[in-house]
Length: 342
Figure 1: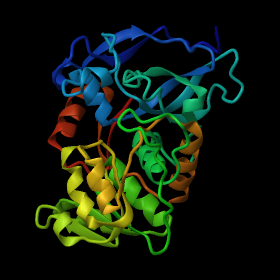
Figure 2 (figure 1 turned 180 degrees about the horizontal axis):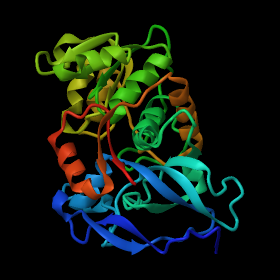
Figure 3 (figure 1 turned 60 degrees about the vertical axis):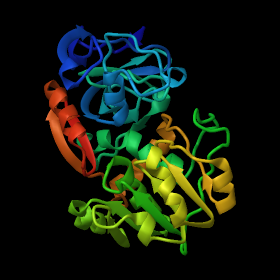
């Protein structure tokens, strides 16, 4: 049984009873969950939106059955939360009621992290203490995108195999003399990856649409390519590393921009030919982001120090989750979309 049980038994949460468009997201009154062993109950202040939220809502129609996780409906989506500890399980020593925390919850084991709610349970190991200098909205925007950028570029931090490849992902050392191209540089993962590469001393090329030029320049991009005017694969050569935050089937076009001995990291794995990669001398590899409170604490310190920043595209109240998903579907997001919980 948890200690310091929450004073309320029910809460507002966004649930879906069927898969479909944003309209299936419904605000309902549901029981407050109870933390199990090694878990705490968090009073949620803000929730970061991520692509897995709409994949779960849609039922992942494009994912092959062998990769598709099981969904138990009705489900409460959401994996990125920032809030205050409201109760702790009896075996928890590292956190106490009143502590401010944020985290990527139970990913990738579950796409139903339950964060679109007033309360959510979370394993202590998935959480980091929220720095006092960072508000809940910015803290909630960081976990999945920040950890994706960190685990692709800085340190994987786990030895779980990727479902998409046999080879383990080993980030390339970055520093002076390293050139990194980030495709989708204005989005959640992209704008954080650009800043982490700069922090490590790399020369960074950002690819996005023209509307994001000044934004990426402010974040430290050394060169900007507007993909609506120039195809990066036509105007860039000899980069050490491409982080393709868009990824997918078209990721292969970036092979020609990479020098022999370089790497291409598609965040959403695409269609590649191992023989072609080997002939070009390019390592194509990726990983699957995983919850990691220790790494998130490091990212939190960089955020609190102003070394990196998280851009907020827009915020919506929890009750307007459907409108937030509609915003996401329109694309061209600058940074992150966040739900606020009163």
